[in-house]
Image (cartoon, rainbow, N blue to C red; front, side, top):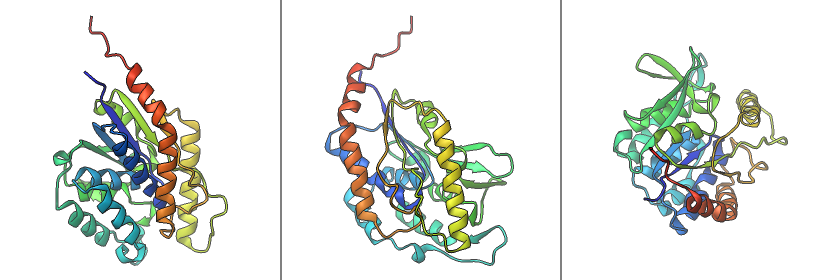
Length: 262
């Protein structure tokens, strides 16, 4: 039987819309995805895709996305944004589905703010899990789930290769949208927090061995992770780099051998 292919979608704010371009190429090339795992924006894209939205619909959603339409600013205590509005938006788009209802199967990664542990959602309400995974520390109020305070999955696992491998994937395609924008405009406290997190996560990826079979790194370093104004260009970057890796993906599939159980 053919190998099961898993896709690990990394965090990266607005640059994560490049994941849509990658998914488009995989669909066009008839490369089936058996498992999806995502951190932060990667979790959002994975859940929306697996909840049944076609890529054409997701493209339209991305192009019409306006960050301020979904941000509910609050009095700073544990974060600048309450997060209720974006939760409701995700719940609407997923029609209130649970993660275990998704197809292909999905895993959403978040971080426990108190213990530092990686939290992997394989069940539960999708909107609640994604809300936790996108909760950038200092920007969003942490999500409280089952008595735990959870923040952005990229804090502990920016590109969740090991998660999708543990789900059962024989071949893992990783999508890393973490290149640091060294020319980002820093003009507010939110900019300071976001850029600092980008630096930390870029270092995390640089020093961690990502044991994927194929790595796709869209050239999105010129775009800000927090400016949702270049969506079409970012999606195109994902398409371009994915097309370059189609040969490597096909080779990995062709060369895969089912493990012997002797």
